[in-house]
Image (cartoon, protein in one colour):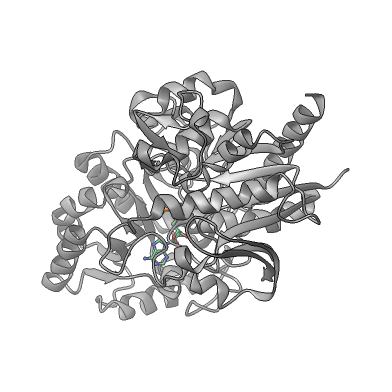
Length: 487
Ligand code: ADP
């Protein structure tokens, strides 16, 4: 089998810089693809967090001026990942969140920053930047890389194949039309067939219009984004391109997320010694100042705090949680109103509600290992990763029936796939009341220790790794390469 060379382009990559699941996918997929004879290089911005960690960097390309300053491309490696780093200090020498200023607002030049990233992807894509790595396929992730297929198209050179992957339709990258020349796009690009989007410039739209193939991160989300509601303005375009759209589920890195080797948790365990989870439950209760109560039904949440994630619905369920004697361990950051509401509830009910506002990988692992159930009440969820980690850790997922949550959790009370056993609880439509019923249903089942253990074990036996999913990406890359060799 011929090796395929892929340039993956993204604004975040685990473990160097991460705000959400995008980083996890971009960091794990290239490693899983090695077994499929796919040689991936990932192009990422040179944020301080990246430049300070990447090893053995060497400059491979210099360009000035580049979007208003000096830039160079570095090649380097990090923990099995082969990277190209766009070192452009005027755009990326900013610490902290990759998109937000310290005041928590979008950097005003985000359009230019990620246009530059996409532009560099195209320079590599056409073979100008790095003669030793000319990709067969350029794989753009989310709006930040969405212009890459556009720069390639309007370069009018020999093009590699292109894929646009949507990790979240809620972030589309729309900018005013006057930015066209600042983004170094030709006037011919500003049409409905190009980058024009409701009178402005749409980064994600451009990628979805111009890439050879489109993927998103679950089969159900692939259907949802073809509707007017789920498409958030792009449903019509996606209906038109339905034949080129695939839903490929995300996996998780099962070496990072492995309860039998995890050094971040209090006691390691596997499906055959689930009683060892109790030590993690006690450690979690202690860590968040909850009552150390082995029999309390302990719910976990690890989430960005945004409208998408439905945490307001969970908040509205606090009367049920408190009345039924459940406990909650929440780790999250985001919307300041939600943060304040959760903090206040924790202060008022410290034995039952534990909240840590912030980003904490260690605590995320302990929640997965110690909570009885993991709640994901999202209004929409392209794939969702925390429920996959939860399956692997025996924290039974209680999720809304949307997107990837629908595809990865099996609930016998909802239409289940033949031959599968129950791995969690699902509710729909996404309302406070339906979440309450799911919590109560789960709580009742939790009291039956043998039944609960069966649900945990069937979840833990699911394959949530990247192996099969990476093979699907590899098939798609090969399909695109053959498309280009025919043309
Ligand atoms: P999204 O990408 O929409 O935020 P996902 O479920 O796809 O949601 O991915 C979220 C990832 O980020 C998971 O790996 C989860 O464990 C992690 N995560 C989210 N919030 C936090 C946090 N506050 N601390 C540590 N990890 C977090």
